[in-house]
Structures are given as C-alpha cells and as structure tokens.
Image 1 (tube, rainbow, N blue to C red):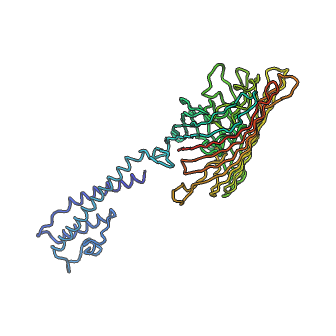
Image 2 (cartoon, one colour; image 1 turned 180 degrees about the vertical axis):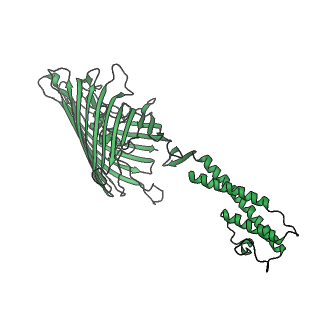
Length: 530
C-alpha cells in the first residue's frame, strides 16, 4: 500500500502543477510578443515532460524548438503559429488533467478498499476474508442421506432376541451446518451443529465448537468440543471416508477412550514435513478429554488421555507410505462401569449386536480404568490404496479377585480408482483425502471418478468365555464383516456410495446358547458437502 500512496501523492502533486500551469497560460492575443509565446510554449512542454505525459504524435511535439530557452531570431515562426502551438498544448494539458483526476479517484478507491472484505466461492463454499487475510469466515455443510435394507433369515433361533428384525429404511446420517475460519491470523475456530444420527434424526447438538492457537510454527493447541486426531480411520474426514461407516473396531474404542466428535477436551498437535528426508511427514498428537456433549451427566466428568504418532516415511508424485502408533488410557470412569459395543458397520438401524454394556448385550464390566495400544499402516500408489489398523485394549477390574479382560480387533481395506485418480495424503491429519478429478458432465465428456473398494474387519469382544468362574466371563461376541462396494464421485460436492456387507456374528448368552446370526446389508449414501 506504501507504493500506492507514493503513486497517489505523485499524481496529486502533478495535478496541482498542471492546474497552476493552466492558469498561467493566458489567451493568446494578436499583439503578444513572439518571445513570450515561445517561452510559454517551452515551459508547458517542460511541465508535461516533467510529469511523464507523452507528447508523441501531437502537433506540439512536431513543432518543438531545439534545445535551449530561446530560438535564434532568424527563422522564427510567426506569432500565429506560436498561438496555435499554445492552444494545442493547452488542449493536451486539459486531457492530462482529466486523466490525472481519473487516476486520483481510482487510487482513492483503492485506498478506501484496502481493508475491505474479499469474497470467494470455491467448491460451493462461501468464504469472506479481510484483505490482509488475518480474518476469515467460511460457511460449511455436510449432508449424508443413507438408505438400504437388511437380508436376514426368517427362522432365527428363539434365543436370538437382539437384532432379530433389523429395520430397513432411510435417515440422514449427518446433517451438519456451521462456520469455520480464523481471527488475528493465529487463532482458528470451528462451530458445527449436527441434526443427523444413527437410524434416526435428532433435534440437533453441538458437533464441533473449538478454538485453536496456531501462532507457534508446526504446533496447534486445540480446545473446546473437539475431535482428536486419534486412529487413522477416525482422522479421515467423514466427507472422505471410503465406506459409509468406519470399521467396527475403531467405532468400538473411540467413545470409551476419549476420541470421536463432540468431545470436551484439549489437544496439542505437532506436524512437520521434510524432517528426516524429502517428502516425509510427522504428526504427533496428545489430548486430554472428558465426556461427549450429548451424554447426560450423572456424576463427575469421565476423563481420558490419548495420543497418536504417525509418520509418512516416503512420498513421491505417485505414492505415499505411512506407519503409526496409538495409545490411550481411561483415567477416571465415575460410575466404575465400562461398556464397549458397536453396530454392524451400518447406521440404518441403531441396534448394537456385539460387545457389552448396551441394551440386550451382556452387562457393563466393573472397572476403574482401561488401556489401549494400536498400530496403523497405509500406502497408496497411483489409483491403488491400502490401509489397516490393529488395536488391543484391556480393562482393570474394580474387583481384585477377578481376571482383567483383554480384547482386540483389526481391519484392512483397499480401493482402486477405475478412472485413474490418486488419493492425496493430508499431512495435517496423516490420512487420505478425496482426489482431484474432472466433474461429471452429461454426454460422456467426463464420467467423474469411480472407485471400487473392499474391507475385512474383525471385532472380538470376548474374554474368558469358558472360564470356570462365571464372573470372569465377558461374552460380547465376535463380529466379522466383509464389505464390498462402489463409490461415484460426481463432482467436488456430490458423492454417491454403495456398500454391500456380509456380516457374521458369533455370540453366546449367559446360558451358553448361540445368539449370533449371519445376514447381509445393502446400503447407499447420497452425500452433499461444501
């Protein structure tokens, strides 16, 4: 802006000189001496040149006298010719003054608007920011409409009471609207409200309401209602996940160990690229969290400590290779009862079919604390992506006479873009995002992006199933799921997902009877996000 001010000052001063010059040019009279006319002509030409006003092509330039204040007396032009030159120069000065005034007005407008808002509309997301980019606010939204049906046996055994008739139908899995941006350059904020849910819609609740400080290079301090970057699956945005639901083992551990969204807490992140080699990326996360906002408080706040260390050790134009480690501990469980359970990787029906501590499943385990460790690995090469995680966790019972149960689970998933795109690696979350592609256009000019996918997941919530002491037993069951599907990325805002799940649940009740079942699910999701 300093350059603009100098430029403005130059033209304002130039305008003053030009105005004075015009006042100094009298109307030429027949009896005016040639010497005076020649002096005025030369003075006007000097004023024009002084302020960078071109004389090229004008009659005045072609008739300009040679260098010097005065011409020789011999061969001078008549007074009439000098008068014409004065008139032409006056005309040129008048045009120059008009141009100067226009430039001055433009510069004043620029000075006035230098701190005005700047609007953008990239990928259908309205964003307004200050000219110095210290302030920004963007409107964001994510709507996911799920529908589908279950294929179950009609003659399930009588002991099977939980999930005997899973409900077909449709619901908005997510219906989010909010704002995000930054203030004073170093503070990020995000406020998102969600009206969607599992198997139903709700009146709405806070999904994210956080403030982050980013003023220290490579560090982010995050506080409020947050979603910690815990596990690779959950660190992948719900707008970019490959399947309609995250893997069962990840969904089982997230809530009890302090992850997932709507989590009251604080988080510290460190992220940096090119540390040990060109293209590498290190993400280190530590968080201290409380309970989720939606949970009704009946006691003291439950608290957890969790962390993640993820490292991309190789990256080039065609590939990324990544490994990671997760750990967590439940610090305080006020009611000393813990439950771990999940749905069958579908939210069309909210019934939980594996685990303990939920309606119809074995009761919660009396425990005062719990621990978790996990590993993750992922890679992609061109259109091919491979990703997997393994978790093992254990509970420390309140009763010293009972055995402490240990559980585990894992998943591995892969996908390939039939249309050749490559998933980008998002360094800030150490996870994969959505590729760039040409939007779908009718007539076959572009099909959008098409992705085929497959996943196998195992979630084992059994411990001491046949122990001679019944109080030691935890018969949460084992759930194995094969998932196949297809994703159509219509454009950057619209995606249509198709999942087919083959579910195998093996679970015994307290009497030792089989209460599991085998079934399949076909579901699809229409997603619009910005």
